[in-house]
Image (cartoon, rainbow, N blue to C red; front, side, top):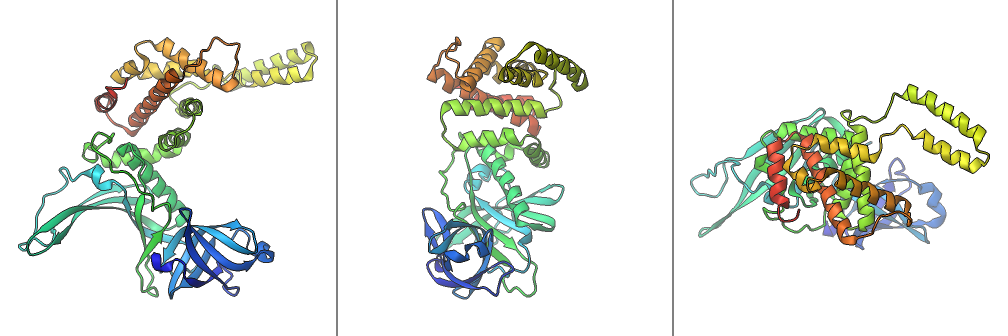
Length: 434
């Protein structure tokens, strides 16, 4: 990648090859930028052009997700992804992707994966294992092997684990990146540490392209991650007996319970104020309970409540003269059929009561725990100083931690792990904390 940086190149926007311009790719503030000689007065002409194609040092590249960075004198664009040696035709569509992730080797840890068989001179590994997961439109393959570096006096064996995604048909890069993000979140959840891509390549099937393997660069991939140890890991690779089931379920809940996972990972990877963290956790739980058909979402039928609501609103219209007061009461009546957070949490905890970790979370005092969550949510939503709620930062941190564990329990349950397995994992991991 380094020879593509700070060198002059010729570029053009997708579907506009006649209007070439000069520029150079630079690295600055932990990001890639394309500095161009495009004048500011030409900006409307190039507005919303997110794909840029060009040559640098006789290497053809495609820049994807370009955004105007500064509209001064000559234009500079930020670049999210760089495809090296890609002979761009009409779309960024691929069938096969190969990925390496930070800490993938530490997560898998080569336990019970495959036998170590070498040829006679001990220089080449002769066996490796593929773990395949078949999904609706593509297949995920864990390619588990070792790289061997040897000399006449020594040899070194290192795990060399890759994840491949093979689609049934050529797939747009936008869809591919979404699928990769779901896989990344699964790895992060299992490792209990945020992971990121170390390497990404796309295979192309094009007889006119001498480069079959397209390397992809992004500053998003360059982030370094601390190495994890065995205590960090929530679910080890070889503990997943049915990888097909678990990953299939992960993709399902990633769609069905997207707000739950989005909020979990937002708090997982970012340090925010504990008040905001708490509100987001309660929002995540409410979203999950609304989306889960198992839990009642309304006190009564929609049509039945609609009649009652209209009668109450008519009564308010006659009785109340102030328009603002009418609107305020009307809005409250509008949502009056929705189950309260207190009732939602009660149903959830009743459903999970057989888990030992739940009794640790609520300290065997269900109503008190639910009351603390509801009172805290109400205070930080309305900031009502006249309430009896007492601010206590230490208790808030503990409450946040308990809600986080509760969400992890929900995720593990939705993935299809057995009750005993979930209890064992969470009780061991958090035994010294709650």
